[in-house]
Length: 174
Image (cartoon, rainbow, N blue to C red; front, top):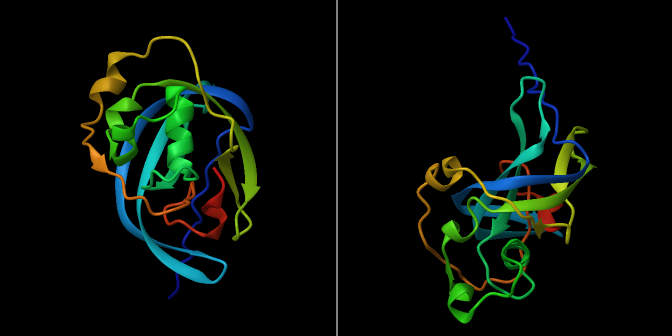
């Protein structure tokens, strides 16, 4: 006897300009990623943004998760994201010491595009250079929803964001 395993289906975050809140930052540990035939092991984190402008049928906000290599290189996507959300450059101390509390609860504006996945599905991605801070207060729920811990940032070069569970070669542009 054989069983057909149904494909997991979901609606990706809608295309366009949105606002939301940096809701969670999670340490994803050491992950292998491949690009141009090379495989690298890098320390990754994921950042979840909950939309406050796009909602699913049941009223839940759409979320988008971006993966980053833990890096403070001037060219790294994590650094670009942090500087965009904070609306300033990083201090020397912040370059080597990343406290997720600096971002959690921050309201941002971002632009979502859709990309075709290797399996033919669609994934939502945040357009590079589209993240900006926005005005307004965020409820206490975000500030208390996680227990962020400071993370040492290794200067390991360029990195990439992703919306998949495991980073792939598609995960290079933030």
